[in-house]
Length: 117
Image (cartoon, rainbow, N blue to C red; front, side, top):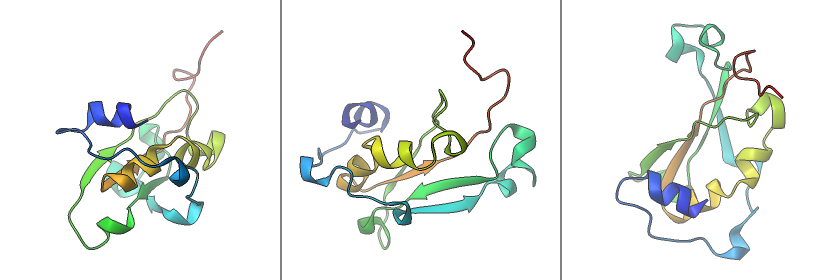
């Protein structure tokens, strides 16, 4: 995930997290927020979930950090996989090592967004 974020963050990233830091986060490290106010009071009408999540590394609580909005797809929304994607993808470790706040807006599946086989 380091290289995916390094490519997408202006100026790139500076630190690759150590192997011992992976999978060291829990759901309590994510803050849920109401997405409805950002969609005229009804996120569901915009195919968005009512709840999104944000990860703020401890080093960013009282300092200015960059923000990365992570739009995901392919069934990686909370209603499908719970916290697994956010906690196990490696994004949190990279964000913590690089003082990067991560926003995980959540979508709702639609017939248009489903993979057809």
